[in-house]
Length: 158
Image (tube, rainbow, N blue to C red; front, side):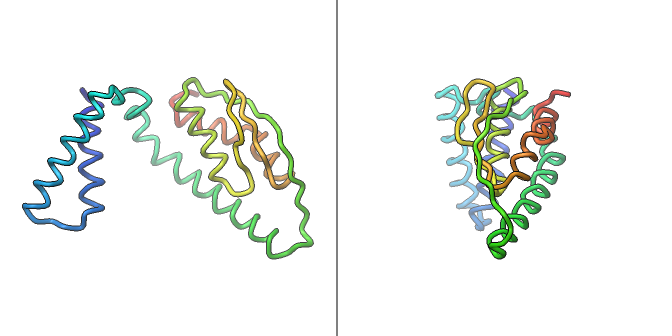
């Protein structure tokens, strides 16, 4: 029930932010839209631990700033390498262990690697991720386990 209520709140907030109209007719249409979307999600049985992970909601405020900082650092590195062809690139593919307990955690880890410029998650097999890195430094950054540890904390582990 908590997840259903949370879904209604999230859908309502997104609808209000994206609609840009704040009069009674649009409030009514928004309420109908949220009710129909929530009913469909409930009938499809997707309002669960994976479909709507409210248990990690507050941890977003710690993890996202760290992830944005990593994205900015990687953007600067990739931009420098593009603008200065003398800087070396050494593309490579490697596997890295994902220590997350759930599929949601592994998905967040794989997507975080892909969001960071210079690295792309190519494949996920169980708890192993296959990653392509543009440089040796970006490969070492992923292999260091720092991002894995951050995602584990975000997921709720230690």
